[in-house]
Length: 142
Image 1 (tube, rainbow, N blue to C red):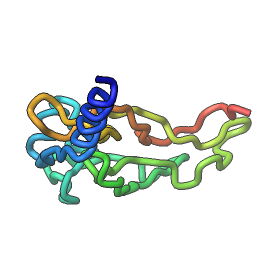
Image 2: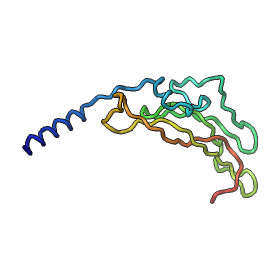
Image 3: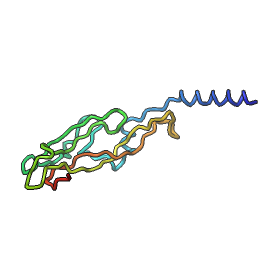
């Protein structure tokens, strides 16, 4: 009886490890992210929406620049743009330095599991991701 139980357990574990989850398409992932999708910062296909330009300080005491990042395919969306200081930690006034202002956005990250969700799809979870939202002259944190 114990041998049969062990054999059945082994077969079930083998089947679970061979389970193939259906991949979610971009529209499905976009729906899963919902209002967390911010067009001015994100793109799933490298085409950022021109209706949502990202404004940044090109002139001034602490200049900023756009940064583009491509994430691994375990993230959605994979393409981000944000603002960072052009000269991070440059002295801008007495006792102050240029520092990137941090902000957090929500992305989806594929779970590292062999299980599928209830509908048989890959499992994704919302995860925070740090980006730059600007550049300011601020008190040195040291």
